[in-house]
Length: 490
Image (cartoon, rainbow, N blue to C red; front, side, top):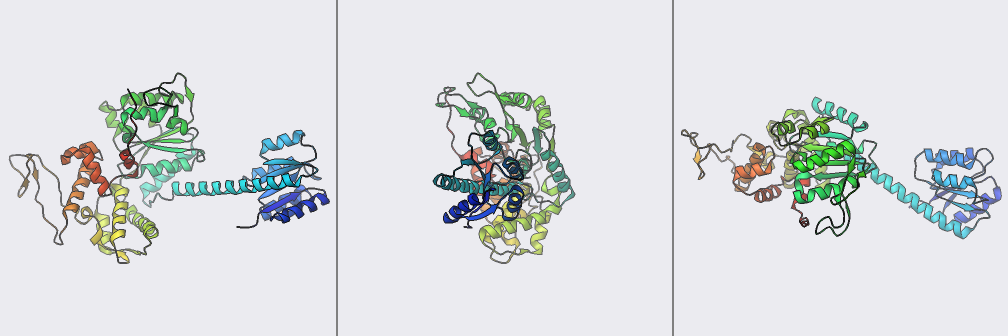
């Protein structure tokens, strides 16, 4: 760990000498400045961790120097030195962001403790800023890969939205297109980036708990409400609340959400007072919300309020230029994760990846590359370890209704429907691959609606979710639904 630097700024030479002796005795590197201009120059060139700054200097006030230091926005601590700790200047310095002050004549025991604490505080602030920078980098535009014209135009628009004062944003697109990444990019590139980003998948929370999760509850609001609980709107105050799968919200909660968006106030369950909040709400859906409005499943006024700023993410099949850059990105990612050195893909793999429609979009592509990276032993990804659906994209495994003229060569099913003619690939396959392909196809045909997909496969929704998890088709946010949640009383 580098030796901490302490800059001593005082016009009295004896004071500077005595402070330097003590700082070096305590293991610090000491620098001296007799006036403000020298001090500011040393701060720029030497980047000290702590500045011991006298209130009275020959060329400028210590307060002027403090103000200039704070304008740089770095994490260094400033300790004021004064002969009169009761001066208004000291109070003003603390308000301006000085870490502490110490009086003359100097108490070196007190100074030693103050310096230790200041250096530790500086180190912690630097680490926090570094971590925030990493979060912004990871959650910004760096993971959104796209060279196509559609994605270039989309990201230009997203940057404008992030910099705006818009408090409601609607992101629409098919499942797996990266709506959560766009939401994070908007937050972490906005003026709210240092405040919370709070995501919630509306469809993953039981209806009986969702109101409490969003708006909080007061003690005694229901049987298990043994203490007051803040809701996600309060937790996200000053930041962003990301409501994924907004189309699954019940009519009752749609009405409550509309009031929050209009008035920026919430009321906890069982509460009697309104609580002011300042939250940017980003909603996302893979459903056609305009159609849901026409069919009476979604409030028209809420839709228009959310869609003031509307972002549509095109599916991967409509921007095939992005497939290979995404593949390169995922290979690099999994090379680091799995400690491999895969260099690229074969020509046949490239052909298959480009010809496939990717109904699960970027998420499906990522899962396919992860699977291949796990299984591949060669320095390039071959077709052998791509999912069956990618290797055999035209098998057409769909069930037709029973008719007087069933498809030629079709296989009858017990439920009166027919499967079209099927053939097993020359290289063979496994029942597990077929099962995965059927699950993927059901999800594709249902537009990602799990209830509908389960009905197509004649299995329960829980059974479908088990298979989705088994085959790596479950989105990370969806997996949270698997966690048990306490049920409130009546």
